[in-house]
Length: 405
Image 1 (cartoon, rainbow, N blue to C red):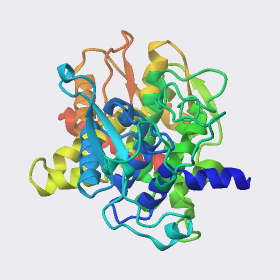
Image 2: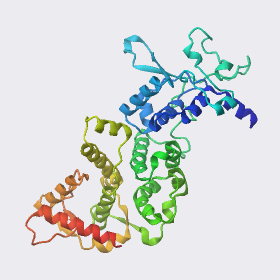
Image 3: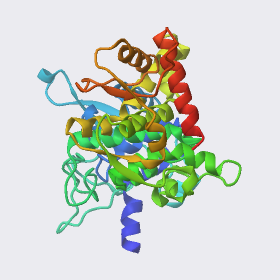
């Protein structure tokens, strides 16, 4: 145990990562650097991850990654060098951990740190591939010495592999992206999520089964309403680890589920209920999006609309996938009495077109195909001549009914 601790304390990369966590860098910049450190060896060198790998592992977009890497470089926490052949137009980048000039921290001094300029900032010292003790690395023995790791891609390293702990079957790239996308949609729904560790929450999210992730997304709003004013919310990581949404009393959520055929009454009621719940979630802007709004590059309404479109689409993505495969979807039984009053809507009818326009106004996804037997929606007032007004009143009445269950 002591030997492992000593080796960890001697790791230059570990000390750099610890220092970042205690720095005054913005939270997003610290998070991007923590992700980058997972591609580094113990010396904080030999790091050549493509931007695409950083995007996939962090769940952030390319522009955000580039902005915060540049910010870290400008503040002295990172050294970025061109790598590869010039004929490739320097497409590959090499990232080297470093400390700002004059950086010092009392706790780091106790661990043998202190003011630690990078040995790579002094091109005239050290040999290529040498582990220098004054840089935080352990001087290797001649026989059985630990070698630097030169292949640090999460797709090939068993330590950083996204499939690690995922079960017997490895996740496909599409599944990993879906899981990351669902996490990024769920995370902003948690109060003060910026104050908690994203890495810890993401690690717990990855351990959940798909069914638990869907229940978490759907039941988190009900859970937060249930505990409001009674207890302080858990951190996101603890909430996910405990699967605390399962603590909801029966009255706060569905008590049972039954398989429902695609486009049946119960299936359509579940579709609308999930989209209504998604629409009521608060829209929170990322730091880079706030900068874009403040600078006038984009309006708040434009960004909010795009985020809502993406979020609503992700909520019902599983239902559409099952429908394409002609598989039933497990729907909550509390919607059955309400769905029994749904009315049949003929394909290619004006009423169905009005329901499609309602989906578009509310940033909800619409179906890429309509079953030939038609669809079922909440009943509309037959005396209302304006169909757009009629479907708005029908969906409002439906929302009122499910809120009383």
